[in-house]
Image (cartoon, rainbow, N blue to C red; front, side):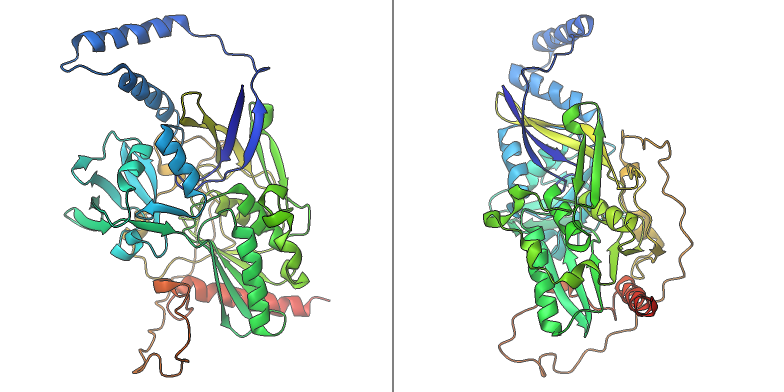
Length: 473
């Protein structure tokens, strides 16, 4: 027998996944608890005999398995064959649905973050929204995989979400049209001459390759070495592990430790360094080899917030530990556990928490997150908005931090966020643009320091870094 294991460390539909094959033949089976199994069989029999309606054996067993897994922590779960397929498709950058990263909270479903340029984001669904109904089905009692299954569907079909938002007195109702969700992993632009901006929305199969291409394009457009780069990981819920390692490797010296994992079994213990894995290299090549040498020494700022989870925290933690970047923003999500996706012989599989991951210096961010070096709140968020932000420590049954402290580390109190200066609306927006110019790759979230306070402060920090680097003998 063999198992196909995707190791996952992510915020629900995000994650950190790596592929491995392992034999099970030599693994000893745990002894079965006979007394407890007798109780299970007795309950099963009573339900079959006395429940108000007939129940199929398969449904009872499936629900028992789900309960056994979901009772462990917020990230362990059972998947049938279709759900197992959906999970695999979600890592390839394209699937049919609404574009929402979700998490469990008190038997309900909370939005971790809407994915950029998707029906959910365009409709105005926000991080922290509580989904209480999908069409006519109440969400309470549904597993996350069941909720995802109901929200996904044929492109063009409609689904109605009933949302509870703490700032609203009545539930909000959104009717959305499902679409093919093509999550573009990497976007980039020059904020101003000499200063590049790279946004990673989610870590996917080709993220490292796309990042390398983006950095090359920025250097080419700037026509000389960049003075600094901002890596924006805000509201990035996670993704493939090789993507996180590849992004880290783009900025770190070769073979520097990026992340390591600790679990009970030998295969749950890994040490991953700043080298792109062979299985993630297109056509066997290394896209990072084409990066300008300056990319590994250019002043770097990483933007993070409460929606930065899993793979985002791996990258941020590695760059912070190696003193390669200055982190700017707010406390991250705090998803520091690893899940193995294990196929079952009857198709489908289970997602089981098997390890915790640690930053190079040995920090666990589980239920704690990463504290930025420079704390900058989002000036557009009210106190109520900030209270809606869901983090790992807010999830029921979350794993404890192995250091015994689930509370985020206290950071210096940030200066009061000043409202960004209003951006004047030109009378003719396209007046100075060539008529053949392509639409922005960012869509409605075009990065602009004039109306993004965190971005403007990150740019200021970057410029200070660049000045200090010049002064260093």
